Length: 214
Ligand code: 3NM
Image (cartoon, rainbow, N blue to C red; front, side):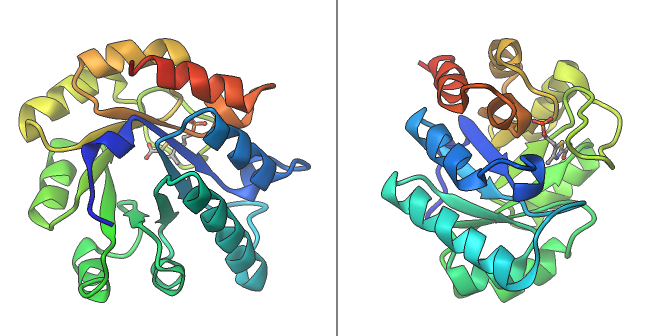
């Protein structure tokens, strides 16, 4: 899929490990009903499923995203992204190197996002041919156990000074009230897990986030 900045507005991320005892498909469906603009399948960490179960969950989520015409992005797992022909792949600084990933995806129509916390990481991602940057964490987050120290909204401002109009989505501990300040700081969108998945009403939470972009 050809990348467009617009998909970054309300970028929902989920894996089954984020919602133990609940149905991740049902939560994704509600988020899609609420208007999310992109979805990332991030099946990772304690409690994540693997192998066939991971593949089947991803496949079901992809089918659901397709029915809402929302881009389906895979976190880290290049082989899964290739076999499902995902719309995009997202990699972190500790995942496979961008150059290797670019090579593997060379003939596929898949965009690539890279996590970046510093100007150097952001610049390297841009130079390496990334399509967008996921910048954070903005605040302390309990969702990613190995998250680094927060860069705050000021961190987004200084990254923007460095990268100009290059597409950037903010991530990490983001709540509804952060959206406008983050947009003012130059973020093209917000990426969230718990703000939607831990809500009593994921559809309503997704809608509220989307309303900040109207
Ligand atoms: N990446 P929540 S923070 C997946 O800083 C992820 O790169 C981060 O979850 C980074 O919205 C994070 O619940 C977790 O804080 C985001």
